Amino acid sequence: MSIMYYLVTNALPLNKDNIPTKDLRMNTSRILILALIIGFLGHADAYAEQPLQLEAREGYYQFPFFDTKTPVWSYNDQIPGPIIRAKVGTTMVIDFANRLKEPSSIHWHGLRIENAMDGVPGVTQDPVGPGENFTYRLKLEDAGTFWYHPHFNSSEQLERGLKGVFIVEEAEKQPWSQDWVWLMDDWLLQKDGTIYPQFNTGRDLMHDGRWGNAPTINGNFRPAFQAKPGERIRLRLINGANARVFSPHIEGLSANIIAVDGRPVTKIFALDRFVLSPGNRIDLDIRIPEQAAGKIFAVEDRFTRKAFELASIKVNQSEPVNSPKFTPPTEANFIPAQMFEKVKVEKTWDLNAIRGGKFGIGWTMNQKLWPDADKVNYPLGVPRKIIFKNSSSRLHPMHIHGVFFRVLERNGMKAIEQFTRDTVLVGPRESVTIGFVPEHPGIWLTHCHIQEHAEAGMMTTIEVKN
Ligand code: C2O
Ligand code: CU
Image (tube, rainbow, N blue to C red; front, top):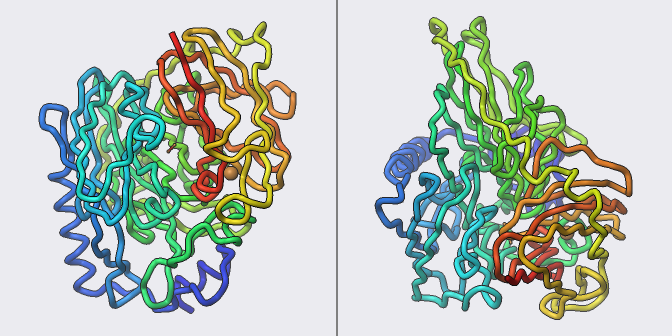
């Protein structure tokens, strides 16, 4: 039985026609391509001093399941797009060149930046047409793990490969042995090696969006990462999938969560069934035991009923290295829950489906479909409390641009989360109360991060005025 078949039948709900059945094979062209990609990545890390060009264009990508290459859309011919690294406090200038056959834009997920740079066509800028360029100037005020993706025809553009990680480095470097970046994704591939070409289908919209049949980390299927005994590794996990929710588990290794959605946590805690919905990130502190030489640790997803392997961590047969000793920073006073104690709920957004809209099924916030949405206006600096009330039986990872928020209650009961977020998964029939302080003027999009739900209307805005 092939690995793909195993995955598909055991973990992934999917009709059989879309299932690639070819055996996983490591052929020479794959090795060559991997080497090229790794080579490119080395050069693609860009610092603020040099402007970076991101060019969206059509191209090809070699998955290990097929003899032929898969047509994809990518940034700079890389799947995923280049990792952008910049230092906090600097301004990063990114020249975006759209060489696709349709408009696009780039949104910098989680970054608090000037509203005009937020990359939302029709809200913060005009769509960047085919052949056009747009220069993004990003003044980086927060260090952490962020990512970037288009905000136009997003359910298709992200699914075809347009996404990348954006790392803003802390002013003070910490002595991690390694800093790993894992962009988690999943692809819906057909037997002939192409991406399933129908988007926003009734099936996607009636369910939790488009779930794929080929989960990848940095575009690779079940990659192995090398570590040494004694190492202390920062692992950045980013869920860049259209719709799939991951709950990563590392068998046999203990890991601590040190940051969520880019921000240091209030208090460090152990990774244990943490749910990473589309848009979410976590940073982990992983210690490889000194006695672990030669061991292999499997990293699994446990969100679906049947767990499946995402990647593995292979520990070299070598002498243990000195384990760096330091405590990652925490942020006890960042938007603490107490500051919302006397604040009244200002808005409840009811999340549900209706018949209608451009795909026949619409996803609404207070019965309205984007762009005819139930929008809000808030003054700068005043704490706000809002509720996302899910009246449906589907998942809605709700994301707000340009702000971090704290989850205060779930179903009316006090919730204690040792961190802030920019995206929260609202489960079936669940209601989640959040608190935040609008600190940046502008029009900030608020939407479900299941791309198909957002495209089907589940979007609104929070306008912040001085
Ligand atoms: Cu990743 Cu509108 O967001
Ligand atoms: Cu949704």
